[in-house]
Image 1 (cartoon, each protein chain N blue to C red):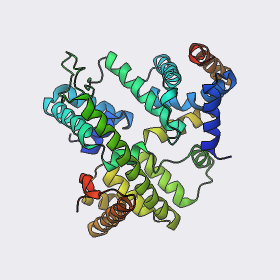
Image 2 (image 1 turned 60 degrees about the horizontal axis):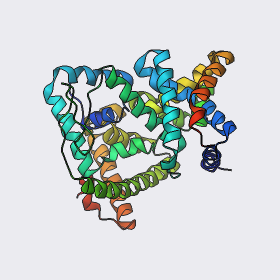
Image 3 (image 1 turned 45 degrees about the vertical axis):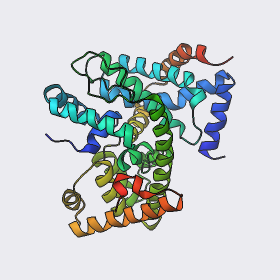
Image 4 (image 1 turned 135 degrees about the vertical axis):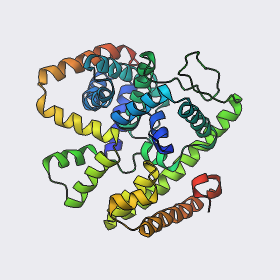
Length: 132
Length: 212
């Protein structure tokens, strides 16, 4: 299986869809050449900066907003916007948008008590780091 | 009030130690962070631990938060780092050395790296920051222009080429276009981006992908 430079960059940024991240990890275990390529890519990025694609992804130039994903779930986006949303989600495989959509979907299914308990735990474990 | 302005004020309150503001931020973002992390770990309990580390990381890195960035993107960036650390500890991810090359570990998963002086790294990071902003602004302008005109085909085309690295022929097949149309969209995008970079007072020749 071959990976594009952009795939490897996204791998370094933990930004590919989970299945593709796992495929690259699996390939790295047995392909020392791929490991070397990844190392070179990392070094090149340190010197030359990031590619247009990784800047596009990091700046989230085409990500939908949370409200737009809400509208997507409600089916109220225009047909063109909905088609683009599917493309961005499925063909581009945007991890950040996938996370937002999963969260919005789960919010409709999870119990409030479960969510509140989780949030309370996060608060209690981190509030000590707030500046007082 | 815009979303960015609201987030700026929320962060200001958190900087002042406001518990309610911190609670609000957790409530707004924990679900999407958990979804982002759990899709890789498939272990809810471990994913919740990484979300917890992300929030602590956010508070400890708050002095470095750049208000020009979106709050959500900043949190996803921290979550990515915490997730990467977790996966390395589990032995699933190779350790990529830091730019200085001084942190090479002994695992067989380690990647080859280059060693450079700290001053040169600092200079290049500063330069890269400026270039990043210029390119992001230039690309955002073109995409917004296309979006307003309903040119979704051009957006999809360039996203496949630049973000996923697809070859022109594969993009053409996926979008039902001729290879010439794909090449034209790419040429148009890069020409507009060069113009934007020049307008921002930078030389487009320093960007390998924009050299004509």
